[in-house]
Amino acid sequence: NQFSGEFYQDWYNNTLQGSNIPDSYTAPTAFNNSPIRAHSNEIQKYYDHDINVGGPIKKDKLFFFGNYEGIRRTQGVVKLPVVPNCTAANAFTGGNCTPSASLPAATQQAIINVLKLFPAPDVASGVSGVSTQVGSNVATEHYALGRADYNLSNNDTLFFRSVTDKTEFTDPFGGGGFGGAGGGLQLWPEGDEQTAQFTTLQWRRIVSPTVV
Image (cartoon, rainbow, N blue to C red; front, side, top):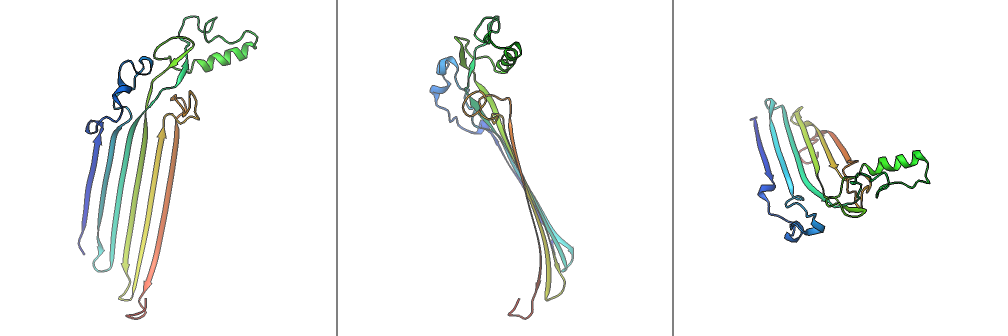
């Protein structure tokens, strides 16, 4: 017959973590002068907060309890896709990215439009090069629970409980492998969402001190 509750929050970012990328990967000359950015694949931000409260609605008869927890995680991701080098002024008019003249004009233009989607390589050399792509995976979860208990009599009790758990995840490189194995370009991010719902209603009766 007393109210009670609590609240807590957990938070940290990548300044609280050590680097997990070898120094040889972040050296200026790594990967043909296209090094990986230090700390780029660590968790950038993490939040976890929870609150719950419970107590009587009607003394000795009706009670409630509620809980909510929210989690959000942001983690850096680095991809090194090989992309066409279409940076020259004549790239599409006789240069590296010029479609075959034997193709219909509409097809040539369609090819050019696709090639223009690719970012420029970090170092323009030859017909292709590596492009460093940095993005963030974002995951969230929202969990909520509510419960009520009611004492109908000395022998009968009733309780109701409802639980909802919703999760979401966004991958900036999830677009079907476009731009290299594993999806190296942030053109078509992939989002996943799931919601689970559980509801329980229970009536309990004590027939005798030894039988429920």
